[in-house]
Image (cartoon, rainbow, N blue to C red):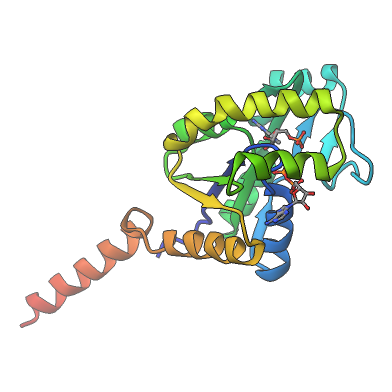
Length: 210
Ligand code: ADP
Ligand code: 5GP
């Protein structure tokens, strides 16, 4: 059996509920490793260095790029965001499913590099609900909210490039759906080539002894 973990990329409009969903997923199912990204954006109230992100200045971020320590990186609304390589590789090799919560350009770069990655897109049930959640979160100015909605408008065109779309209406239902998709992926034939070869050889062996 292939014991390596599955790499899952989660994207979705800002305010769709990705952070809320991830938090609930790891609380409910104690089996996922969440990658922590590096970013040059300022921490929001309540965010901690090393928990939500590794917050750093542009110079430090560019050093990570130069030293090839990121799986991917992208610029999103004037800030850099990137995925540190070491943790992801270590967790996948240990057999844990790893979740990256990253935007669409980064997601497509990961899929191009590692085609067995599962891409999930999270969306609220409507555009009106998205705006309501962004305003309700109360962490951005109206100007930043407008630029995030503009960005959402562009991102909507990329949804069909994802493997799955998840509508985050009822949070618990969405968490369970996400868990079901990832666990189902463990049974994909491409992820079980070693087992398929093993059982085929065993059957050949039995036939020889007939
Ligand atoms: P993202 O990480 O995608 O930017 P957040 O997780 O910060 O989004 O969620 C944005 C806002 O929407 C938060 O105030 C959060 O409490 C709320 N929210 C998340 N999921 C739901 C849901 N299923 N129903 C209603 N509100 C939600
Ligand atoms: P936020 O500022 O709301 O935390 O994140 C803004 C966007 O950056 C979100 O769409 C989030 O998924 C994305 N993001 C977070 N970390 C990374 C990363 O490591 N790489 C890329 N490409 N995007 C990221």
